[in-house]
Amino acid sequence: MTAMIPEWHWPPDALTLSRQTVHVWYVALEQPAPLAHQLEQLLSSDERERAARFHFERDRRRFVVGRGALRTLLSRYLQVEPTQLKLCYGKYGKPYLAEESKGSALHFNLAHSHELAVYAFTQEGEVGIDIEYLHPLADLDQIADRFFSKSESTILLGLPEDQRLLAFFNCWTRKEAYIKALGEGLSHPLDQFQVSLIPGEPAQLLKVQGSPEEVSRWFMTAFVPAPGYVAALIAEGRDRSVEYWQYFPFSF
Ligand SMILES: CC(C)(COP(=O)(O)OP(=O)(O)OC[C@H]1O[C@@H](n2cnc3c(N)ncnc32)[C@H](O)[C@@H]1OP(=O)(O)O)[C@@H](O)C(=O)NCCC(=O)NCCS
View 1 (cartoon, rainbow, N blue to C red):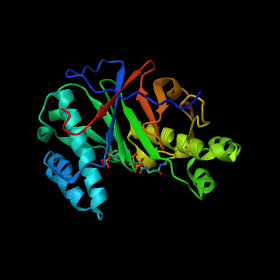
View 2: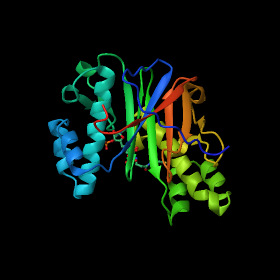
View 3: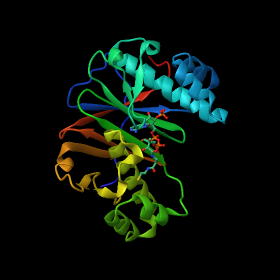
View 4: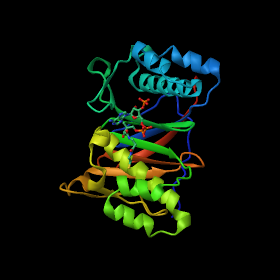
């Protein structure tokens, strides 16, 4: 089995998010300056302040496009103007819709790497998503030793050299997606749970130390959003289906 390469569909005018479904969106962050400027108008004052703190214009623009796209997508689900949406943040920085912006239950998470962002939306249960641009890592073994569980590191180091980089990022994105779904960021001990990582094998949360029931509480999948990237999605609940949509700024 090779990595799943989703077909990114153009969204229909009326977007329906059923209870069992998770919507995943893909956004190219490199947009021309005038488009980025228009998206910037959708941001809240704290988001604009955050944008202004980026040292490099390229990073500032990517953040603005990513946030503008998030607001546009949320507004589409909630039928509220993007500028009217209020976001709040959990203890470790996970963004949520503030109570007054909720309308209906809508959970989301997003991730960005290099030139792409991915977003996940669901009506039911928590959701976490991660994306990484595959780039060579000279200290891959040391990073794995530091962040992965013992069995993940052992599996990784036992793989042929040419599979290791992909296996590393498989592991990284799946672990990151899980801690993002929990909202705990790096406060969650990374060596206390195990995910699958061997290229070609299905993405799975395999074991959570001290909480055996966790494994059956989550649905996990992995996909290749674009050549050179790998991504993972995790959502609470068992039988979830995933629909993949592409967003182009101002396509709606
Ligand atoms: C906070 C954290 C989610 C940041 O991760 P990251 O890899 O830098 O960034 P990602 O692209 O995956 O995600 C960023 C988005 O996640 C969201 N986010 C921030 N804190 C979050 C949290 N605690 N939980 C879930 N989502 C969070 C935000 O929307 C953020 O987007 P923004 O920059 O537009 O605000 C956190 O897990 C972290 O610091 N990780 C560092 C990487 C690491 O060591 N991972 C080990 C994996 S084995």
